[in-house]
Amino acid sequence: MKSSLKWFAVLTTIVMLFILLGGALVTKTDSGMGCGRSWPLCNGQLIPDKITLELVIELSHRLVSGAGGFMVLILSYMSWRKIGHIREARFLSVISFSFLVLQGLIGAAAVLWSQSDFVLALHFGISLISFASVFLLTLLIFEVDKKFEAEKLIVDKRMGFHIIGILIFTLIVVYTGALVRHTESSLICKDWPLCVNDNLALPSNLYEWVQMGHRSIAGALFIWVSYVAFIAHKYYKHQKVIYGGWIAAFILVFLQVTAGAFIIFSRQNLYIALAHALFIACFFGVMSYLMLLTSRSKKNALAIKRGSATHTVNGQDEQEITPTIPAR
Image (cartoon, rainbow, N blue to C red; front, side, top):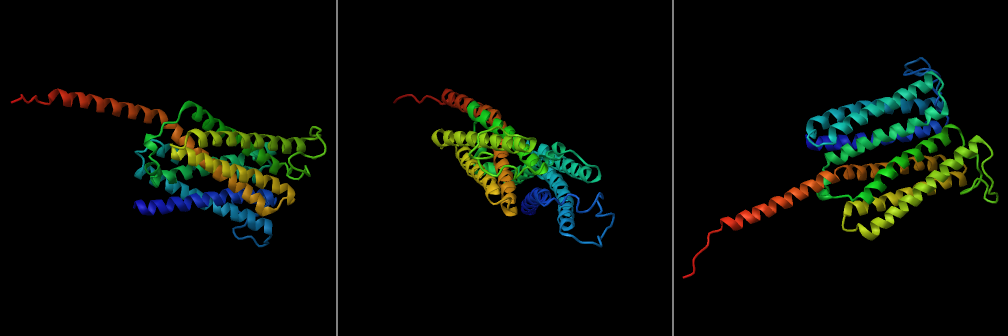
């Protein structure tokens, strides 16, 4: 049963990734109204009679999202039963399904009633949280903690601050990036890293502010992650999961920034744009796992302290009851 649960968890994680990329594809190709103002049916029909590329993209996204919803529900139920004794399992089960439902409702509302770009930009971030929850459930099912000896890991206050701060800051970066897509501001600036490289003037309209605001925040995230990765390389090599996590995070955020730049250079190549969404999803997954480890740190410290105290007491007791053999 545990083996089948593992495979199902991996499959569900992959489907969640397809939901994320499918949503990005819908936005990038402007296919949100491919099925008209009809939901869950397409143009009010079970099987559409007029097939267009936009309809195929939108309908495919709906079908994958629907299948993903059922899979997440099943995974949540199975996780609750099989690994419910793990502290985070039940919480992640609820979050993964709840946020996926919320994401679907926002998507439906966008079709049935027009929504502002600022509301629609929440869609990707909500999907990202659901994906990260499923990803963490999968790691718990595979007992990755035991492989990394995570039960012995103690995250100090400095590293804990950076992990929590960067995770929250990433959500802001994700929101501004989604806002760039929904306001169609991707190519409002012809150059990179500045809007116009030979002109240091401030943005002149809302679209330039959205684009340059996202670049500035994303740049700050890259600098922050680079700094913490340097700290991890210098001081945390003995904690393999922390060290490896930050190296992976740095590589992913570097790829993310590079893909963002090449969206401009390639004039919004679709494959590069989807890679941009993929890298941030993987980065958020890594940071979420580091956050999970941080949340356990105090508990681990207390357990180690108690174990050490018990060992000391047992050692004293052993010494006291050892009989003294008189010398002959």
